[in-house]
Image (tube, rainbow, N blue to C red):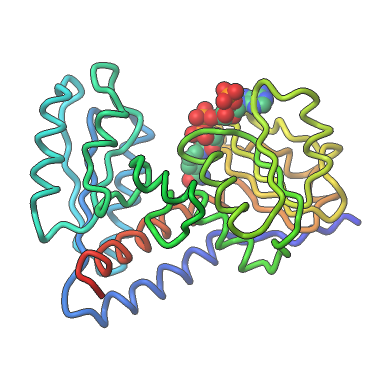
Length: 283
Ligand code: NDP
């Protein structure tokens, strides 16, 4: 033991971004991404800047629209309506979380599903829940599937446990694993005996937002452990949902956090923007 293969998300993401850049460069037009940020949440400022830079580096047309923290829901909906109506815009992303005066469900449902590069619109979520994986799929779980396939983790018939059931990560993650013929369990805060559920997993995806909650003795020998968590410790360091040093002794594959799933999320946003652009233009 003692030797999980560490899946290098940064390297896989860099390769995916390079491939997207090549595909974009071969197009007679530039796919266009518009990211809307409301307010100055420090994490959102960083995420939006990262997405914009990655989009520009891949040759996309990218711009960020910033609304003030006290913007009304109607203002945001107007901005979305303008982007929906603009034929040059292929992808629209509203950075979450939103200030309390704005209802995220209303905003998400206002985005043209064909431009919904986050994949959160109920039409896209519904397609995925119906087993269709050819639509716009949420970036983080899509990135996890890329990592599993890249690492050569066997999927068909594998017992997969997804820790977390959020609309953004856990639920779509479970749908994608199911579509890949895994046998999927979704665990959450009301799950009885979480460690026992995790120990049954050949593929364990942790998306709970609790620093290093998943211990080494929760992991089956040889399992693929994917750590989606990004948690800020009191000392300022970032850490995942998995106790990495313990888990890597037991696991067969493991992603570091940071440096695992995070970079894939950004790369998949670019991939979704390219796919939306091709689909909208009938290519
Ligand atoms: P949410 O807070 O929306 O969901 C967390 C889920 O975990 C919920 O389903 C919740 O259960 C469950 N949960 C919380 N505490 C426990 C517990 N003690 N035991 C069991 N289950 C628990 O988070 P997100 O899904 O948005 O994100 C999860 C993590 O992933 C966060 O750390 C976030 O920062 C990170 N993240 C990383 C991204 C990346 O690009 N790397 C992108 C998005 C998120 P219940 O439903 O019962 O409340």
